[in-house]
Amino acid sequence: MSLPPSRLDLATPGPEGVDEADFVVVGSGAAGATVALCLAEAGADVVVLEEGPHVPVEARAGDVFTTVKRQIRDRLSGGMTGRAISPVIQGSAVGGSTLVNSAIVWRLPEDVAFQWDRLPGLKGAFPYDELVRYMERIEDDLGVGEVPRDRMGRNATLMEAGARALGFAGNVIRRNVQGCQGSGRCLQGCPNAAKLSLDLTYLPRAVGMGARIYENCRVSRLTFAGAACHGVEAELLDPESRRPLRPFRARARRGVIVAASAIQSPNLLRRSGLGRALPRLGDHFTCHPGTGVAGEFDEPVRMWSGATQAWESAHYRPEGFKLEAINLPPELAVVRMPGAGREMMHRLARFDRMALWGFQVRSDARGTVRPMPLLGGDMIRFTPSRRDMGVAARAIKLLGEMMFAAGARKVYLGVHGLPDEVHSPDGLRILDRMELDPRQVHMMASHLFGTCVMSPDRSTGVVDTGFQAHGLPGLYVVDSSVFPTNLGVNPQHSIMAVAMLAARRIAEGARVSR
Ligand SMILES: Cc1cc2nc3c(=O)[nH]c(=O)nc-3n(C[C@H](O)[C@H](O)[C@H](O)COP(=O)(O)OP(=O)(O)OC[C@H]3O[C@@H](n4cnc5c(N)ncnc54)[C@H](O)[C@@H]3O)c2cc1C
Ligand code: SF4
Image (cartoon, rainbow, N blue to C red; front, side, top):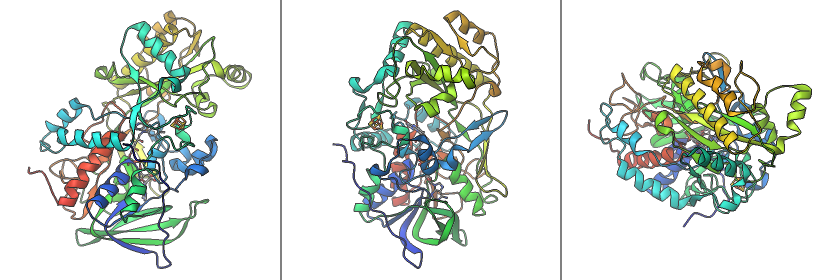
């Protein structure tokens, strides 16, 4: 039985600006909300500090501008720099990115768990049977199931037809949604409380068990007595201007759990002066860079009608990429359309006939995450590898072929230096002959991994198998920054399952023997 979407009662900071609990959790997203709930269930007193605002269902805006301004980190201006500049998209709100994501649920692939198990010192660190039990619980709690056929929308059914015509496998997407009305607005925060994001489920449940959640509360540094972490210093932010209003402190009797995402977690630790103690902090960063290919059909597609994401194919995961249909509002979809001025207006006039299908690469490149000097914010250095760009070229061509097989009259490749429009499958052959440069394709990333990697020793990683930072008792990291590799599938489910594993180990003070 799935949890009913519930109202969230937030804690109000007192005039003294202090709280104290067994555990202080930084971040309320997929990892933070899950670890908070599990620790509360284990009988611990928990405080959660979240930099972003709470956005109740009735306050969710339909327009992209308000969404981006209020609940997307850095108002969507953050990105990775390397050979190209690529946007990194992260939610910053109570519920974290689960408020604004597409709710796609994929179990941690067994081959990935097997790969992790064979890494030096990680035997038994991510026990697959235990993780499967947690994933089953999450699927039950969050009502995970396939998008109903009558809510798929034409964008998704055309993609399904394209794949069928080319003879490869795919499936209707499974999501943590109950009663989807097919409004295609998941990325703005579901206005119908159908998406069971964690602000509507795990966080209210944790509050019911005594947890206290503070919104607009940005943790600026961790505090220590000797090597032991015993709390955090934070700032309460003005909800409109995002400027600091006054300080807030939280003391942790048993530990501080950093769950601020694979970008903000390592940077919070570094800003707290741990760069020397943890020499691999912010290294090993990786992600799933990807983008969309648009096509124009003779028939109406109407991306605004249907679940945001409803059909996918992991058929080519062994080759390093995954395909998904995605319904975007015109303000975002327009990024995939070439041209400007009158030409762009002409194309936009046919927006109702446009389909958009995306790919994500399981990158083999590695980058770094560091705090931005002077300005604040995050500096992500990452360049997709030559192999990644080869995979991207293959995926773009395949999506084009699928579009034509489904009846598209033209495909917008979205590759600089190539024709804006291609009118037949023959026109796609150009992709066979070229080596794509990262500057030619505007890829972006929202699946982020590996900056506080789990490893038996601090010369190769940041946390031990008990999720504790090496040599720093009471400091834990539990989000996808600890993942030894990326996944090749959507990560929310794996992050939540690993957070449950972390909660058990932290509550028990357990560590897998080396
Ligand atoms: C648009 C979008 C669509 C996506 N779609 C899917 C999907 O369909 N399926 C899927 O599996 N995955 C999806 N993802 C990815 C998935 O949502 C994330 O991988 C996952 O939520 C990451 O979990 P997390 O807990 O590490 O970080 P988040 O969920 O991002 O939460 C981190 C939280 O920590 C807070 N925080 C950061 N620093 C501080 C600080 N100093 N003090 C206090 N709080 C802080 C942030 O504000 C944020 O709310 C999507 C992501 C995005 C952005
Ligand atoms: S498609 Fe619409 S109704 Fe369905 S989960 Fe997304 S926002 Fe909610």
